[in-house]
Amino acid sequence: MKKKSTAFDYVNTILLILLALVCIYPFLNILCVSLSDGKAVMAGKVYIWPADANIYAYKYILSSPRLGVLQALWNSVWYTGVGTVVAVFVTFMSAYVLSRKRFKASKVIMTLFLITYVFEAGLIPNYIINRSLGLVNNPLIMILPPAINTFYLIISKSFLNEIPESIEEAAFIDGANDFQIFSKIFFPISKPSIATIALFYAVTRWNDFLNPLIYLQNDALKPLQLILYSFCISTDRTGSMLENVMVNGVMIMHSNIADAMIFLTIIPIVIAYPFAQKYFTKGILVGSVKE
Image (tube, rainbow, N blue to C red; front, top):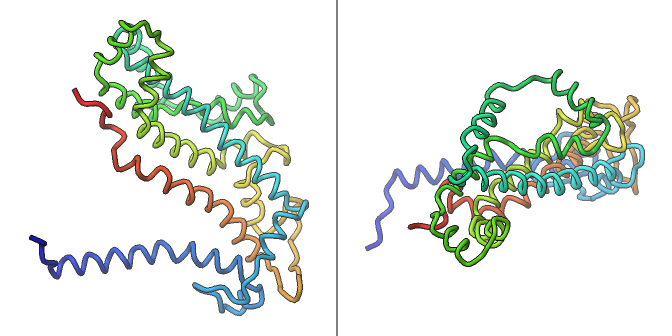
């Protein structure tokens, strides 16, 4: 028998809809400003619908060598893609080793991971170490040092701990080695955990601002976040004010370009979330196999 909706249910639904609208409005406004004529934006006529809709702001920022957005966008994609693949592989392989009871040193190594997680060295010691390793102005600074996040390692290890040892023992009896067990058994049945930490790593890499700000002084290596930072303080990368531009009678203002750049930084993560959403519902701390 279908349960009848109560007044509380209706109120709850209305409040959730209002909350969703409050969360969506800033993104919608950014998109509308980026697609509107600058004159309408300056007149305060743009809210949730673009005025004289056009894509000139996007064409301008992607084609202007002065801004360097296209190169920065490629850098961000490269850092995020390669960095996520490396991080997921290294994290999950480490979690697999540390989750095996036959590995006697697992508790000691995990304790060392936890110590570094709780007691961080700090910015200056990290800079000195990375500089001595030749990672300053090196794209590998965005991939190698953050390859393992201790929190994500704990999540992966907790997931693998739930997988029965009988599966591993049966594989050993069939003649499989450790790498075969890891790649052909544990890796495929751990898709929820892998997809979740992959998304976490990808979001972290894409939004990373402090590391490139400190270590990447070469403009050709800077990600999109740094270009956006430089632009949103009302200057271009050369330090001069960016003038308004007229294209086919449409004014492109600083606010149009800034919002177009902001939307470019947002949309990849917004697209990535739905693909990993189904794995969140399964839970990342619950084992995929039950005894």
